[in-house]
Length: 326
Image (tube, rainbow, N blue to C red; front, side, top):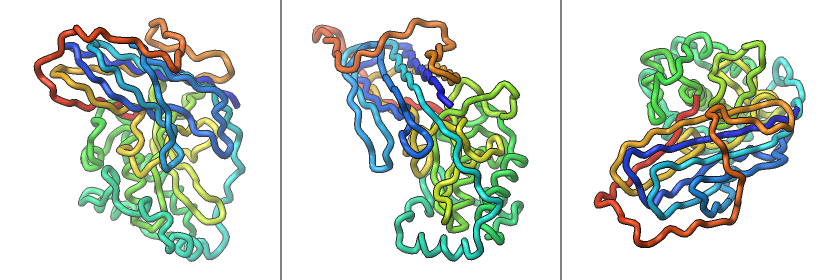
């Protein structure tokens, strides 16, 4: 299956800012049954975009705009091929827990088995763990499927009910949240069982049958757990799904703190609003942004000079700008 993806983010500043520095993690990964055939990232104002790869294999685009601006637009266009993965068994071969413990005892998965900024033990997490009667079942794969289903049934998907920096306790107390919250809760629970688990940032193609409840036109998140015999397996507790060819993987990390789609700072004192538009379509025809604005053609190594005589703001408070995953 081929998908075209257009991810448009606009930052609007009530007062002009200066020295905006940003990194974006929006390029789909190229591994396994998924192949990123084509990718372009452009900005308005136009600036020079640099690219590098982190230790997890995520592609990061970095840029800075030294002059004054009141708006910043970041556009990512991708063409991705996703093949059907091999069917998973109903359960793993006998002795799977022992093989899992042997594989993790060397420490290779250490950071994916312990607390991270957004996926950590709390009293409210302990409460839901007791409700789920969280324990190692007869089989690790069956256990993970049960956790995935239980979270789907016990938590309500509610857009904008939490913030980008909300701890899991906010969603657990209200029993509602977005995919970012569902994923953090599952990761924290799965790690308690001694299973390596990580956060996946990406996109979900929504079929016409409406079988998923997460929001179309936004980024998505789900969890991946490592199991012997089968490797990394994706679980989407927001929709009670096992990740398949519709789940387009962009970045992986311990939790959201490692892989926000955009993250940056700027100098200035102002309120900032962000607008996000994501379109995922089947086929090679370019996905169109739902915002209706004209998107500039990608110019990867072009820099626009900003006159040095532009006035600079008196205040120089650095502020972060990030997006929540829905």
